[in-house]
Length: 381
Ligand SMILES: Cc1cc2nc3c(=O)[nH]c(=O)nc-3n(C[C@H](O)[C@H](O)[C@H](O)COP(=O)(O)OP(=O)(O)OC[C@H]3O[C@@H](n4cnc5c(N)ncnc54)[C@H](O)[C@@H]3O)c2cc1C
Image (cartoon, rainbow, N blue to C red; front, top):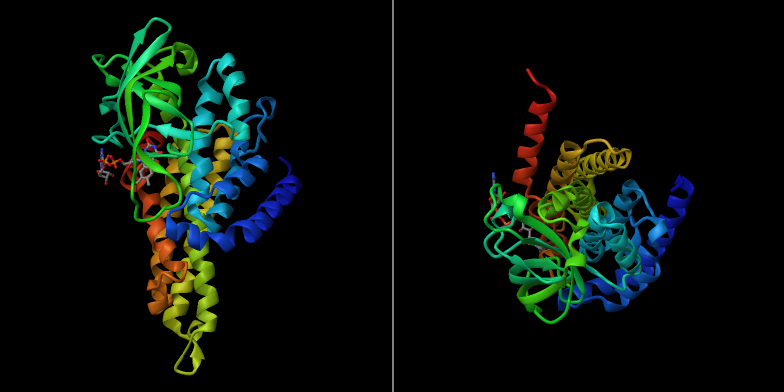
């Protein structure tokens, strides 16, 4: 995508967010209501196919452009970006690892949003340690029969398909050699047990799922070979981390924007609070954190687009940008005083949304460990 095309696209997105999203976010979020109308417009804009190749009906964007789109959407409402993000991680797994028949069958329908969903990895007993999953798929003729429980699965109530991680051989060691990834469409045996109540990231559906004798055709085993599921999903983690980093940039920037505006309006002791040095120090730090997160995210996305190894770069971007989101949301609240604590303002939403970012797509503890391991590997003594 050329710089000019990217500018046109970001401009159109900006107009859409200002006119058709911003006025509705507060109420939708307060009611924890899924934004069906907005999602229909996102489908029309092709956002569900952002990074799906043009030959399969997508927009074929670079990761760098995609990251900017995610940051911009998140600046309006983080939940909206979640509706496309895990859907695109699923799409990317099929695009990179699927058979040609799977790509032709699924990617065009993913791109239009006709089939929408996300990734089903986490279970009640494990999130980070995915080799401990217990959901099992047993071959039965041309199908596999799946039994197990997944939890914290985003886009699973209103979506209709998942990239589902299971064990096809629970006895193998190491465990990942017995793990496989399926394209699992919703049908009998795949039920939503309950929608989870969350601190933030509201409006978007995150659920606990039950798989009870759920039959999935062997044609839906991604890549057509068992035992590659963990590797297939982990190889998409950099993309996932770059998109969470971009969300961090969006929240950090939103908090900064609100703080800069409010600090000029609110007066104490005869002057706007932006003229008090204590507030200036906060604004200076917030702006620097948001910009650092953005630059690291741009750099990681550019490395990803070049095909360079970028686990350390994506880890740094995810860590820095999401910690920036946490700190900026908190500082924005302090700058707003009591109004920051009010449900009538957006500040408290940012404060509730930001913590998810330090947990999802590999916790920030894990990011620092990945960064350190890479530092050692890349710099042998
Ligand atoms: C709102 C929301 C949406 C989500 N959406 C999805 C989704 O769509 N699909 C999906 O599959 N999952 C989803 N998740 C789950 C998410 O991916 C997991 O919560 C995350 O991977 C962490 O796993 P856990 O919660 O089991 O924590 P645990 O793995 O139990 O970790 C607990 C703590 O231990 C630390 N820790 C764990 N292992 C190590 C280690 N080796 N070294 C150092 N520290 C360690 C962690 O950093 C963390 O601080 C979602 C979660 C939330 C909250």
